[in-house]
Length: 533
Image (cartoon, rainbow, N blue to C red):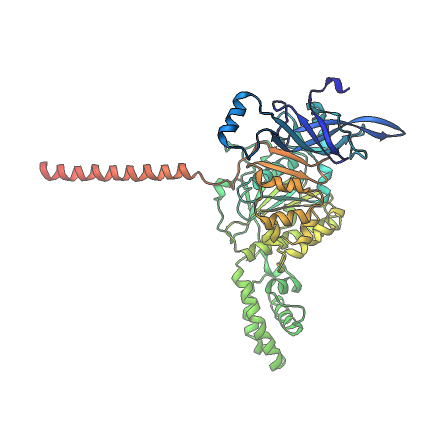
């Protein structure tokens, strides 16, 4: 079988079931991150069988016993010119596993043997290694070193949640857009919490036209949002509104930050609300504040009046949020089979965005966990560190952690997206059994990634700073083995791309030059008018 493979080296020194060193000719040495194959003798069934194990080159070293660093330049140059200087190269490779007939990747149990040949990994083996049945997978890109080999992610892998981690500008939102495109095409129900309007153009092609799934994409925006883009720019848009009078007492207290310990203040608020409800069905936080101010009319004694006064400062916080309207948007508008709902949170205060996230995710959890909505729901949380930080409680943090811990039992799957994994609560991040990690140079964030992922080796962690924009390491349930990917091109328009600084500056310069030209022409006209009348 190995006769048809291209030999590129020989195993040397010590080898183990997980890694080996190999020597090669300088002109044939595979590059770093390239894939090779070695044949390992493994127990398959009841017999020993030689299997092709796929490995990835982790490092390449060249050396010379003659050209030592102690030699001065002139001697070194003469040795090179004379042809005496020796050259040797060797590499280190990490074994990823071998593919069984059933499509399962197993780790070798026996060490590969020194003296065995190392072969360049054939395209057909790599394609099998990183692919799944078409109806059970989504295409995200190609191998970094082998652009002719596509990489697919298993849909079943999303059952264990996913984290997309990268520093700013590395391409994480671009990649998230690809995942949303692919999942929607498979029939998924998707809700994307979008603090910066990165995903509001998913209904448009890169050329700005509508595509075949545009009717399945809706952008929701709260009336309080100033919005990064206009309704006309975005296309199909619907309001996301919350009627204050639809909330129960616990929700009102949560928003107002009234602790469960403040029983008397809660009771005072409850009584004020009951008074209002006796007069009208729809009311606002301002109505509640006025009722509390009029506590002299209904409070039983001075203590109750005091509690009502204390409640006022909490209700003033809610008024300042400017999020509530006279109607509520039903979560049923988002929970539809094969619909992508982008919740545009741009232009909102952090506290308002956080509350909207809490409201939507709580209602999704209730609907799905009770069986009222019977299809898988994929929830993208962009800027996850804002919603679920490690050191403080937010409105949405508890429900996100609940979904991370229990959501998969009911069919709710998280995709947490962040550039600061060290600022995301470790409980939520550790529940993401799959991770797509792009360029990260911050040591604190690297440590957070390492702590949260059991599958990320030290070698892969050290490779993260060397990734280019649009390149990623993928580990976890959705791939058979850790894989390094060049992300494919998006079909849809990107909302969060950086502005074209050079182009915009050039445009500003032209505007100024045109303005100066017009002023010069006007000045000349004035002079001519003075001469000729």
